Amino acid sequence: MRMNTENIQGQQDKELLIEEFGQYIETEDKLPPLAARILAHLVIDNHKGITFEEMVELLKASKSSVFTNLNILLHKGRITYYTLPGDRKKYYTVSPDDTIDRMNERIKSCDHKLALCNKIIVYKKSTQDPGNGNYLLKQINYLESFIRFLEQYKALCLQHKEELIHLKK
Image (tube, rainbow, N blue to C red; front, side):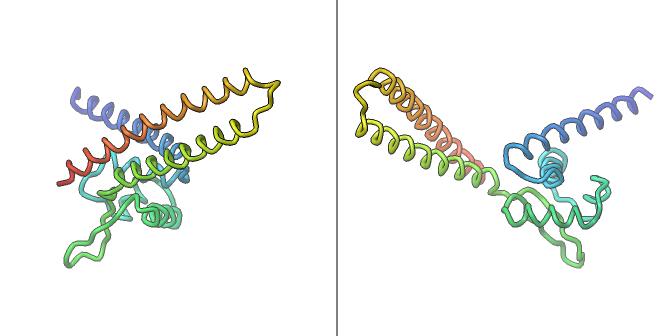
């Protein structure tokens, strides 16, 4: 009986983790709730792939909702599927390049923010109002500090991306 209680507790812990991770993915990646839950399940609970039918049963959602959200994830490149010879079912799994793609998005975002911050600094320096010198200096110092942060963050993202690429080999 003790083993069964531990299994139930383990299942409840897993379900809570999937729900929490799904909410994080939903917010962080701006995905629909069901798409985020699908991705959370694939990351936490499944390494070999899961069929459409299993996903419908597991999520207790309609076939059309699961189908729509699987297609969203496929279109975004977050998941992929494979088939087996003689089996018409598709087995969905997390895309092997998902994390690398997400690192590339972060690097691109850093580049965009860095360019904008530098443009703002150039603009502020070119349109100095003599009466706002101290305030302007504080703003520029803040932007320069933020630029240093972005450069460090970008360097970490590039390093992590290289580690991921190395792990894939």
